[in-house]
Length: 361
Image (spheres, rainbow, N blue to C red):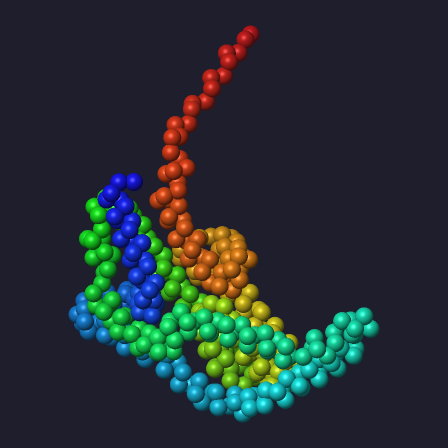
């Protein structure tokens, strides 16, 4: 390794360390960059008529207005949901669930009753485990962003960063100018492909979340669940949140299903119905919507996407289900750039077919 390479490597490592050190700032910057990839095609079209600054401001306004507009119907829907679900008496609701589970237990064979004691059928145990996991994840998130002040400042900085990133783009051209000339050909081959992959993935995942939310809303309306719109909106948005999102979504739907399951009547039947609906939605998302709407946009077949999702879930749980597909898509680009040339290095041309021996009469 010569001196120039060592200096360049030291600069890259120093930048990575600095980015981690000020992660309370770089984390919202990364989030704004990902949002920029979603809004940039719209910004590019609007920029022709409105100009760069006005177009960027319009995209930020759209980003700020869409969530409140979606939440507005939920405010009225949520009031009816609160009237049905006794959120102020969750302890009593837990006791009702346990009592009904014990009634079902009495109808099981003796050997099954012995294994399912009152403690195993106590919902508070599952709630306690889930609360502990949520608490750990929440503490880890708060620690990562540097406390609640870091989270609030990150939320405040997100639209500001989004505006400047949109207004100053495209950024790949600017970054390229600062790189050594020897690195620029690799940069031109790799980074635009990765940026395109991330943009396609984010847009496709947003479409999947939208379809999932609409399907949830429609199914719950047909079954007469209270707060169908609120639950559909919540499950659609929570599907974008790794690890915590699916867990919170399941408990919300299960709680409403037990308290008032619409035409199912609530109770254990409503709880089972909510669980079946949630499981069906997760299967539909993982094995139909993501392969069709995400995988094909990234150039991956349905079969490859399903294998990728299964492998990501086996390795990293729910978080792996979310990041597996873009990781594989980016990995294909890096493999073609770095690993394939090494694996094929030194290979000679395929030797010609051996001559067949002359036939003898």
